[in-house]
Image: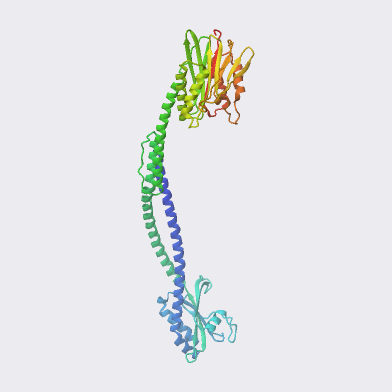
Length: 528
């Protein structure tokens, strides 16, 4: 219950942080660009006003220059500047006039207290080195404004002020000959203050606008994310919880054709697959139950014989098979022991195993030797499975109690192991024969061993025992089976089966069973 709000809040907070971060970055960039632009615009405005101001004085300046009344020229410029000062947005700090030869005709400055004075000059009247800025104006004959702001200290004890310089050429009206160049040192502190005021106003408006836009964008994004992402994902989360609790009828309606919709459709397909898998699992459980019913539910009780068997499937259904068929005709008791192994695993192997069992039990109820029984079963089974490529190995063992002998038929199965405690040897009950379901015309031969004695043990098994492997890939092998028989031959048949299964389990070291395991132990008793 706590995961939903946590997920909901996390994605919402992350989206909000992303939006706020982008908005703040955009705000800072916008303010920085605006501040630089405002500064450039203000300086350009100062430049234009300075040129216009000087050009408006050109006629008066020309007349005063011809009269060599430089004091009147400087004072005139200052007076005109004071007259229209409120419209200029700047103040004139100093005025310098040079003639075409570079001589300083006049150099005046305005002090912070409003008085006009002449700065200490190192220049002397007469020819001198022409400064580059004056020379540039003389060469081009056009006004020039140096917009590089520099700090200037007018008087000691006073703070520095930001200034720029403007140059204006004065020409004779008749022939256009250059008469002089006027240089103005302009205080742009007032201009920058106005820019700062505009900048603060703009910043407040921009911050307010960005805040409102960020809020609206965050809310809109939150609603969009909630409808298009969070709600569908939470629906998937709730659906997954229902499926995990066993509700395989869960269906989530896809929303749109985006990635979330595709994920929802995939989820529904997955649930449908799980539902089919569950149905198949139930069918396999039923098949397993039916197949287990086909195996002996209890061990046969035969005087003089101790018989035990066990089958372990690696899947729900398997292809291993064992059976006991008892006969009592005219007082002669006989028991046949059968073990088989179908190729492969799963449902197909289980069906073939059930078919072979039915054929075998039906044919064994009729007269005939073990070899004839196996030949007839093989004929019927081959006709059914020849086209499928499936086959089944089988070992058919018939114990004749009155005759104290055993007969057997090998149909491609591993030989049974025969242990004799008197000699402490284990031999194999071999014999010719191919697997059932391969050649319907094959005739199986019967093999014989006589003189059964108490204590002797016959072990029948499938290859899932000796071909079992440990985690390192090592094989259990038949020698290990023989060792278990020798070590525990004094126990009853059921205990020998249990000991062999325990040894096999220890060998696998917890690994899974990779093949079906079927084991039958027949021990000859003292009453035999």
